[in-house]
Length: 276
Length: 276
Image 1 (tube, chains in turn blue, green):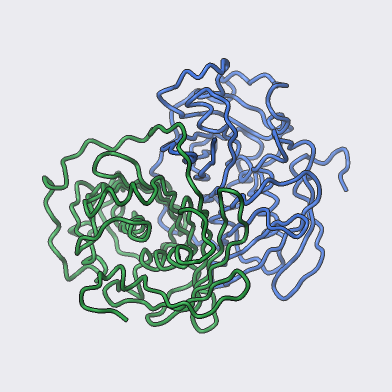
Image 2 (cartoon, helix red, strand yellow):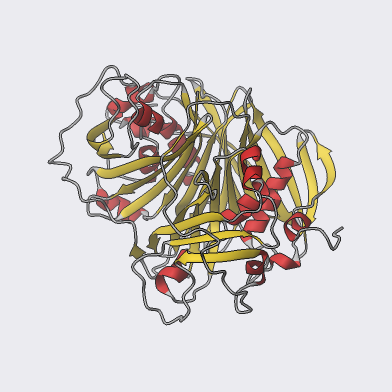
């Protein structure tokens, strides 16, 4: 049930609880037209929908620390069923298993670790790169040649945009750096941060400037911030960077980092992607 | 059933098939005294045991591409039961769910992606750092003050060893670089590479030089080589590097890479670790 004022990210991540069996909560959701990718939905929004199944579980302990999503098959546009189950609950950490299915078939799986954080020695080793502020970085014009979900973000690319000419001129680096936020603006939370972590264009497009079929097979987010820290970012842009490390015989990896505008590393993220 | 000539890694990863229920294969294994850590077994060998459950499954398609292990609770010394199940099998990729339990409780979970690789455009972006060869790097003396599993490896540390004085002098970088191989030597395969990916000392010890309780909560390996490539490394040392990125309120992350001595990036690996 969406209403005109609801943000597309909230509309997409609204789940209906169906039933509870033991500790497993079953819910239903649906792909959302605002988040359409080339084929099916943008993988970041589906990951956020899976995390939502954990966040809305009545037995949840603490907040997300680690989240790994496996894309087993293409998600078809339309409805899906989610099941979320805490497999092990300790004093301060909890381990989760989530499945997304369509027509009785497993389409995606995920594991999550949630935890209650305590104040402890803290230090940041990966510094935010020195770059112009978001305000000083030109906004990318909305593009009708890019998939629909890209219009759910405000993009300000510093380095490593998609090639303007797909001529196959190989680049020496696949590093991208950009400022990005939800469009329309929305206060940052675990759901939007998860989707942002998957918002990088495929590294092989940046590196190779040649269009080939691709699909993420496994995607991991490590959250380094609690909900209060994320809330303090508000709807500001975050600085996102990602780079491929190895492209070999049909799979490449990508390692990435997202920084609050004040410089804190709020998430690190990794994925491995199939390409043809 | 071990015999004197069996390598400790092979002895530890020998599983007995118990039964098959549908597509789920149940097997049993046991911790191995050679791989003892401070408390319970070294996490890398338990991860290798879980991957073995996938490798030995009769329905397995292809070779490992991605593997994520979640450490839900401490593994007790002694026996355990493993279950491995393919959740989705596509034409060239397959998605796996693995659980390790002791006394009916889930102790570890894992997801794996296996795939048949095809020759495709390949290029390596993360270059091996220029370092002296393993032969030119002094071997670390076997230490009785380090946990037993460390004696299952030959260590040649270039940078970022454990502190020699635990005086709490904070270091500016947690980066470690080292040559490492199984001891006694053993030809590299997916099992040993998985264990090697978890062989880095906790980044917080390198960074902070203060002993605190730690435990990996989630660990990911992306394999960039097939079994033939790994076999070609043989029992040579691999160059391993790892660095922490964010240490915050009880959890830090680590990003790592393992290179064949000829320079190929054969695995990238990431983990998030609890600390007190």
